[in-house]
Length: 222
Image (tube, rainbow, N blue to C red; front, side, top):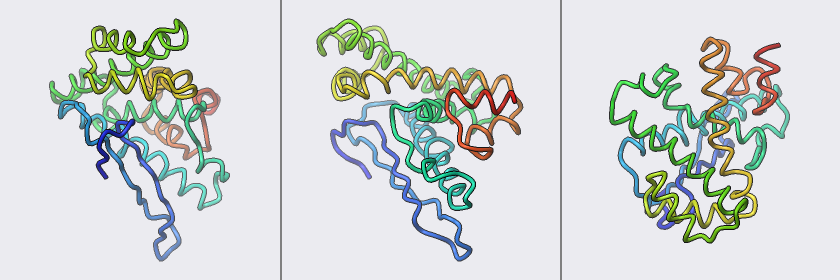
């Protein structure tokens, strides 16, 4: 569902009401994307993996199914932004392209253009951190923040406007959520390097119980 001049890049809404004959959830979701987004094709590949499979749609599909099976509480289906769980989910989504290819490092991806796209996406996460700090830590004006993001983090004019404006100056998104991306990404990357795939992936996706950016260590190391 393309939306012109949306304030977000992509937004996944997992519906989760339809059922199969056996009563299991059908993994239905609506995916909205900013039709005015200006990114390269490799960056778009990363964005789709982030928002859909094996990123956010996959994460919430598992949690919805676990709730239906009564293995998690209702709170597992209504996790929102600005939480420790959301930090973990953004980390999963930003590592999704690596998970899909079965690798742990960007330079192990099979295509050089895709590697560049992922690196640009990670650089955008650093831009999110910088926007949050300059806006709320230093009290800089939006125009100054946008210029710094364009200059130092190679984001497009559209990205710089969004990250310094609608997101950066929002009292919750700007202060709390923008820094969550890089923190979550680094955490999930470290866990995937440390633990075998068969151990870490079920835990990341909540199959062994609902976890967040802090409690996941207890489950993996316990």
